[in-house]
Length: 163
Image (cartoon, one colour):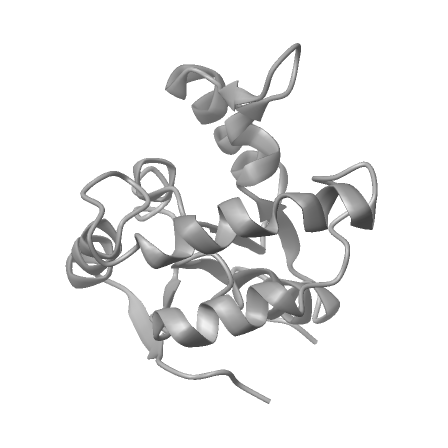
């Protein structure tokens, strides 16, 4: 039996294990939202949706579910969840581990048309992962540290891969 009011946010660098942990929590009965699915508009070229559109989708998801897990690297969107979330998990893995995880990533069919298409994007993803500690945007380590530091509920930080 799950805690019917458990609301978890998971954030960190690409390849840190956010989706893996979120799927585990989903298997325990929490509704799962990958922020990539509401943050991007793929038509005709992929670009980030205006924040108000993503916010509407995020609020609709949180309103629809009593227990949920929301994961992603978007600190601007995650900040909108902190008053509702009961837990925050910061996947604060070393860049080297994130790259290793990204190279072993299974096909993400909700993001890519094929495993080949996903693999064609791997070099760009690795470059993105490497920039995590030095970026200053909403996807950066500094933004995630601030989100984690300001979170008022139960919080946990992982610094290595979990079994």
